[in-house]
Image (cartoon, rainbow, N blue to C red):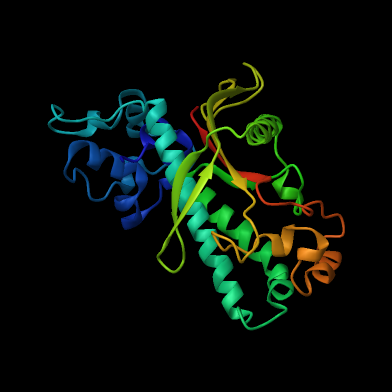
Length: 293
């Protein structure tokens, strides 16, 4: 699927940089992908602004789309993305986020001596605040979106949901209680095998604030518009049951916790709430917030 930078000023601006890096940015890639061939190789002087204001080329890009830069535009297909495209893009980001975090966690587990070390979970728990926020931050910087996980019962306060996210989490819990049908997603595990997971989804275009409450890049007051997406995170069963994930070793009842976990939680998260889950509970959700202003 094409990069969706045509409608995302924030993502376009982040991608702008000096030198050869500009030639491979998302901003320029959208132009080249729309035309079907490379149009420009070095855009430094045309597209880079040192004072944060829009250049003429950026304004043209935002007003007319990537096609306006193509010598021949008959086959150009750039333009405002549909909600279907936005949904597919958000789903893809969540998959990549999930897989990257999964890989980072398993790497930490192996480094701690998994599976022979009986204290592996207690040893890895202190790594979580170092690993998980970094992965989320990396994805947010790379995409220009807000990428994170949220939960009603937090271990890290940074995972506290906002009002829209809290509403979706409540809906997910109600759907789970009703036994509602879930969407199947296939996640590639670190060993290359596929993890089939069924989860609930929510997506909407959300306007935050009202005119006069936000000063945009051009200095105009405006509301903020986002495409928002959430996917539930369902607690799997014990590690000896399919899909053989050890989540309850850190989030289950006290008799299910891994060795050393209780002590690590007392040291690192004295106000932890993320305990007592059982198989099938909604642990939280992956959440993507894409700016559309």
